[in-house]
Image 1 (cartoon, rainbow, N blue to C red):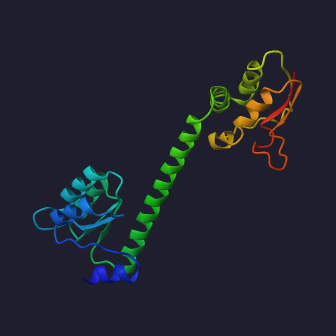
Image 2: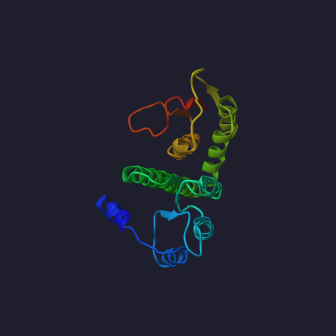
Image 3: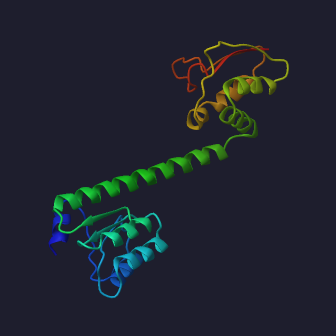
Length: 212
């Protein structure tokens, strides 16, 4: 088919199906990145195929091709999980652009999910003491968590820079929570945590001086 040839010229590897049932059979045995389907097909229409695809893989992108007069069905498809629809007749380039955009969005979603899983895994590896500090800093306001950190070490007083201790994110904190805990355990002057020195993983101003 002409559409398959256009996709192959653009570096895609299309798997062709002559019906919705054949498409579902392909999905059982092949890993695909996107489903491109016509709205009107024999036996199973595009909406029914979409519903079956989403049962198998709720995140798999589906683009619907629709003829004039079936736009309402295309809108229904979007409500049921299709990422886009394109109305016939269309230019090959328009379709290719939509395919690339859908794949890009899906790739970014998967990367974000992977990143989130990696962060959660790192959090799970924290020691009890590190988790205590981590939870305190992530959930509290700067003034509160600076006081809370001091409360973790009896007999410690502070000399704080008013501009210190900006709100930081979970990933930044994961990079230096071990350093914070290590500093809290050192007797005497505990040092400058997050002073911005070369090689220091803590953001500048995370915590000013802690003095025992």
